[in-house]
Length: 182
Image (tube, rainbow, N blue to C red; front, side, top):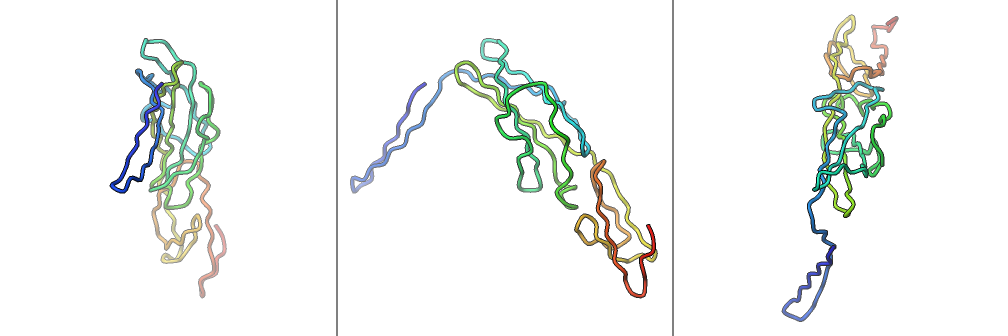
């Protein structure tokens, strides 16, 4: 391990420095075994996290750290905190989409970091997509406004959701039409 320092000086003699520790060597390899490539999930499903780490000499590493991120369009939320140590364990039940739009652009990113005996690390990740379903929302008469997962929808509509997601549907009376039954 080396401490590298960079110092800069401007024409007026003002100086500033910054240092960083650098580790020399070959980092280990991180391999996610489960969930497998191409895996999907449904709401409330438990996912197994399993992986291996191999150092530069071919020895298996035991320091494995996991993280899971729930991505939505251009941002993400922690689903399993970074640095969760262990291997071969079940990730708590898979989430529901954040909202109606999120059902079309969200997924889980599973990240594995392996740390070797020299302090070198490597990280790999795998995206696990939700199992999507198509839901048709209609009314009699058609053209009525309903609220589906807090989003207004005009019937008839075909929307995308996730398998096992409980959609919240709300209807109001639209004079002269009165809601009577499901």
